[in-house]
Length: 439
Ligand code: ZN
Image (cartoon, rainbow, N blue to C red; front, side):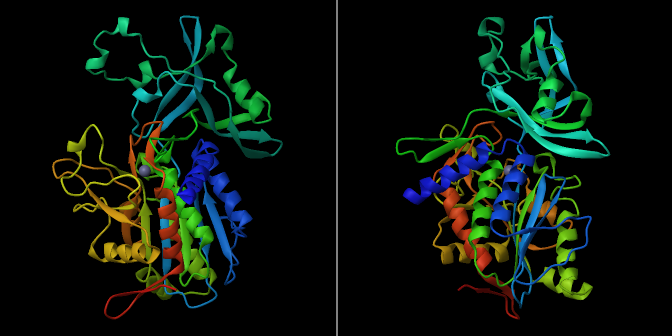
């Protein structure tokens, strides 16, 4: 049990240090650098060497890392997850006056969140600003690391029917209080000082609200964890640890972390962008490959799209499919959808089940109720840009898209173990089917 707690403890620390997608990428870069990965820039020429490991970022919010074997690869083996979570973004002209008694921040929704849990809890602001410095515009990450903001509920006395259901209006109900009337005109000064700059130097910002409550273990035997952003940092962190620990890849190992999944992946750096196809084709070219060898490589590749899944809800068991009912701490959830919102098919599920068995990791299955539409994720969107065999998986959780989500204490270690097995195994197309060479 000890190792399960240790891995989840590390996960909760990683999440606490990663309030926005930009901080996620900075922290992933740090771990990659410590493990000998070399940075490549998209705007520079790539000189790649066999046996070495590299990474590239786009928009400072998406990242692709890869490890090249000494010889003999027949494809890419990828795991994808996402760096973003539903939250609120600070708008330009960020301050609003309220009755000359309060200064509020003007925010808009990012992604589809549960709104109610954002009320009555300490929040703060983090993200990036662009700083005009001599002849250069520099990007600086900021995090106001203290309890800064609150969104107060309306008292029950002023809305007696609120417990019968309430429709939240993001512009009316969700703007957080930043201070009293004396806070007027000081938000950008606060951000500038955090960035080590003068207010006049701040020429652009991507700032988001985040929940200040740290992650915790809970339940009778502390069998559960709760934390902000478990979707999808639990999958991102678990697959990253497996990627870093894996030894001697047989194919080109690829770790992908994409931004903007929560808004449909359609951006310059999302899973629906050219980032993945650009990167894979550049790797092939830098290793001396041809157009034809690239097509062969893609046909020999396999991707795991890792994004969290819904556990059966303790108070709403009727919302789950009658037969496919994930439980926290019971291993990796393989997701199925006939309309291909999830990419899993007979081929990819067979490969993934085999990997779980090799790793001695339990797995379970998820499907939506047939009368309910489910969500979408990375795999099918990524496949519109670069066509790869793919399986959709995740870890079972509750309260998805709340600013404080719940999951199982054991599951991140399970994901790390199966990720490591995946990256160390050689998945190869054969005349009769698919071979998995497991050492
Ligand atoms: Zn997700």
